[in-house]
Length: 424
RNA sequence: GUGACUGUAGCUCAGCUGGUUAGAGCGCUAGACUGUGACUCUAGAGGUCGCGGGUUCGACCCCCGUCAGUCACCCCA
Image 1: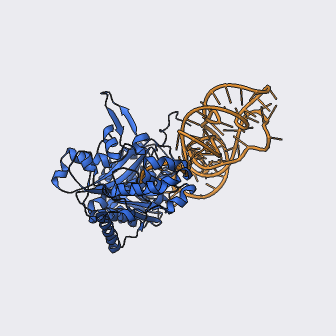
Image 2 (image 1 turned 180 degrees about the horizontal axis):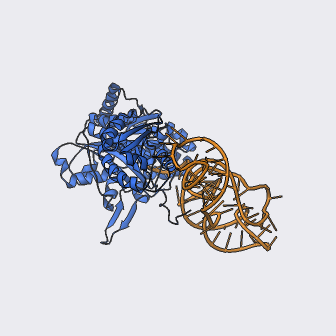
Image 3 (image 1 turned 90 degrees about the horizontal axis):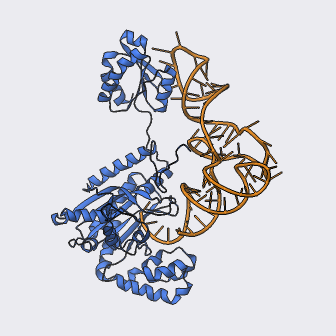
């Protein structure tokens, strides 16, 4: 109630202890990507609007109604990044990366979409994703999937399923489109209102309709597998073969089509049963024509994007907190004289110990100081009062075992370093 | 963009068919315990009852609007 201005709709403030979970996840992601040979790329949070219109597709929902677009003072139309792939490709092209051979890049950061918020969907959300550019073969598809799979495995995540499909290429997709139109058009008036619209705009989208009245026509719809050209069929078979060989479980799901225009051949989703209606935690696929369509060379690529909010929701459902037990030292001074001695000591301690060093500079009773130590989850308290000061000593109290030791003031840093690091 | 439900203390929520000083628990501050924490007890601080309008002698309660939250549709990470 205090503030009259709140965070904008669909955005969230993150603060302790939630930020600890984010930091843990981000650190794990950076280590994982590095182990797979990926380097981090960071691009501007806004780009020329034209980049997304051309990259994502003019008739996609993202471009038609979800972009945060504004005109800058120079009269240029700019848009807050609604997805990362187009900007990454743009940056790689701009700096000539594609003429230096294959590129393995990853990103982590915010995206913006003007949508009505609901569980697992926000106006500012955060994605981790990778782009593997320069390999046309199924090996790259599998590498990308394996990386996402390993991230989930590292948390022992259950209830997440990999769904896989191929949506063909420029040779066979038009054929499939025609086959779908031929199948649905005769039943046009029996389809749901949404699906009638989809029929004209994007027949592929019809496949993931949830409307019950569409059900019978969906079940009898032609499968992409029947129409794939030989090259796409072989590619898909090898992706499946590699996944089998690597022991990564998956289900071929003919209804996965993806919402962005640039996908070709392999598309996949990791779906969780812990997320409600927005159940996709990670999705991606191959985009062999995107670079060329943005004016670059012919560079086949594959990648995925993973929603960090959704990933954290799964972890939360698993009971993951990111918090450990007690850690660190609460430095306590009783009185102005003790404080004058303690402050420089705290500074030295922070240089000698990796754990957090907490300090409070108010005149409080010892009791109040210890309560603060509790709230900080400190493992130890270092207590300096007038008696100790006179004796040239300080008390180290182990707050977990409730034991005290008296240390000479001169040896605090060394002793603290060994005691705290050992956690005894 | 559409729909449903919900907005009372920092948090989780009470508040009978409208009746006049709006409550509890947790948390916070202080004390019981001149200097030893997680338990306990006591006291205190903290509220334009989301906001605006209307009905009424009287509105936290009823009506309209608006904003926000939640969930779902559309769509997506």
